[in-house]
Length: 376
Image 1 (cartoon, rainbow, N blue to C red):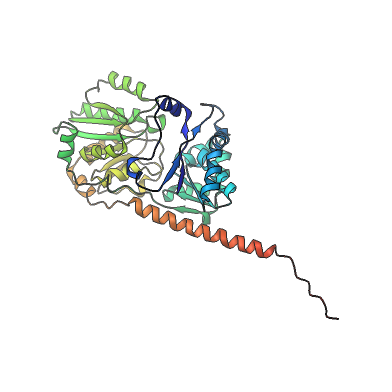
Image 2: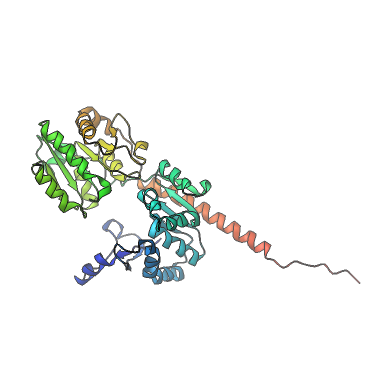
């Protein structure tokens, strides 16, 4: 496998000025995986419909090098646009099958944008296959015009070496220095408008007024953080709502294990791995009923509520804090990365076989016709 992982220039320039170098995560250092990290040059907040062209220009030399040296048999990209557009172009350059994984807003929100929508649809139509992370997203992709025979759901997995229940809640709370006399709620994500964190803060205010002893830990960062911090302070929740900032992926598991509950208030989602990771750590969840979350929800260890309803969100949080939900969550059997990888590899084996068969058939059709010559 050869990986090309573009880094936005807004991140890459400061990173490299400090003489840092991008490299594989620690857990992959011993593998034979090779990766390059070209700088992605683009126009911020403008001409986003051209971001596929801009990303292709940024990575084309790396793609060409990979094609020449590595001779790939297939190309896999994640996110319909701009990454999916680049994946289609790379596959065409190498004359191999392409597949794109879609994850949520790339097919739920982007297609509604007048200039960017057609680019997303082109990717879905030109890819040899579209991999969706839920059946709900599969239906959305088909509604956008993709051939149903070329759309396959492959559920994402979790890393069982990281997300597990081998550490008790009390030990995890002690490790993170959390007050064991409080109920701990965890939210994980990027602080952007679609996550509807104002609704979650309103729900936290309801819980505070109900005298529930709790702390809500917001793990992540984003453009909304400053405004949300001010709102929390205005609501008098500074002692109850904690902004924990960005935390390493391997450390998030400690927060899931320490939490009594994971909560999500989004207006739109695909099927977020956050909730699967939480369940793998034995922690139940409450979420808005959006996207495909209902595909992994179970009334034994979760509750779903309508979006933009802080009152029902607060009520569900109180209900799911009952210990029976945690007991049931500990019975959840999480799907692993290995299972996802094997299913994806099987899909590519089929694509490669189809490509080989089509080439053979095309070669036969292009053979010169033999004209028999009558004997004298």
